[in-house]
Amino acid sequence: MESRALSRAMVESVVDRSLREIVSDPDRSLRKLVDLGNLLARGRSQKESFSLLSRVLSMWKYS
Image: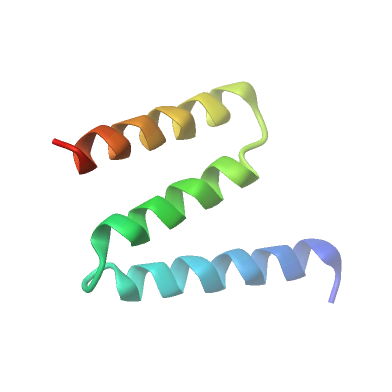
């Protein structure tokens, strides 16, 4: 399996699992998805968007 296909399969696996777990632990599941997006973000605007989402989740958790 080529590297890109393997990476895609891994991301799909994490996203599928997070979506299944969102019912039992929504905070953690959303955090995992945002962290994954931040890790895989390519451009500056993507990184800024995921950084903003991360801050919003942090504020939401403590409100």
